[in-house]
Length: 384
Image (cartoon, rainbow, N blue to C red; front, top):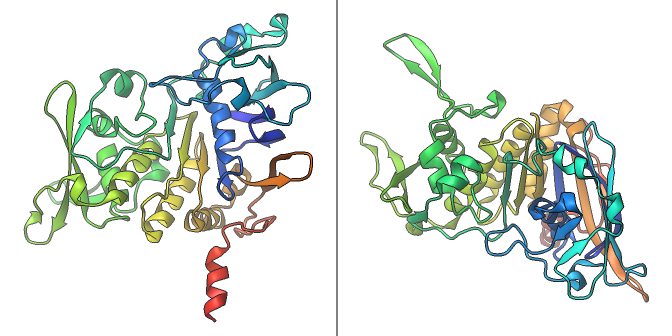
């Protein structure tokens, strides 16, 4: 688990120390630096020669992020022209990486080659930032469609949904019968009664849990996948119908964006592994407020385990659901932290200022910066 990350002169972040926990929620208006923080982690992960002191700014078509050149990566108003990452995993000492500025370079090299600690990266390959216990969902996920691409290597070897969720259907097809690994994440409707054995049965399979949690967003929905070739997976939905079992199957294009967008997020959360790292941008996209609250509930449950989650959100429903989650499980308060991003502009420069916000055992926030998801009350006050 990442214990902390300190950034210096990275994009709009002039200097900031981030004490990270199980659940890390990034908040703030658009263009304030939230994505820059996420990109700092993505660029570290995709830098396959980090142990040799090289920071790879562009991952290409199959990479995680494409930042551009050194000019895009360096804080515009930096005086020392040096970009620094100070990374610390739980149980390790902080490791500082200082990268030199080279005009138009897309691979930055550490300032002093002699300071490169090869052992830091190689000895931390078990950390989710560098191994296959990692999931990242970009805000720009794939649109609803019935035909989806397959990738055995990504799904089975890399345990990967794809940054756009492009392998989600294949992931469900191949791994849907695997059990969810943490019992507290099981939906309350998981239990069924077996009349033959006269016993209650708990279905922990991933596909069952996906359907149950998606049912909180669209009642009665069931996901259906079918591999039709080595390259193509068919994704369809059907709905429970009293007296008939279920409806006909529907193409994702005919049931709206919300279910398909939620499918990626729910699958990523339920597939969490011990020691895993999950990064999701805008999990609330295209989802009804009640569904957003249910996603917040699931996020809170996942974070109670040995899992690290980083969420970028503009949803007060997700935030408030997380606050409720802390109130219902007070131990989560020490595992959750909010970061509020705000751009500071003065005569000489502009940079991102980040406020750390704690959640107490009653779900109360330690700070409430201006514009912290308060637009609902702002508009309501105009109606009263």
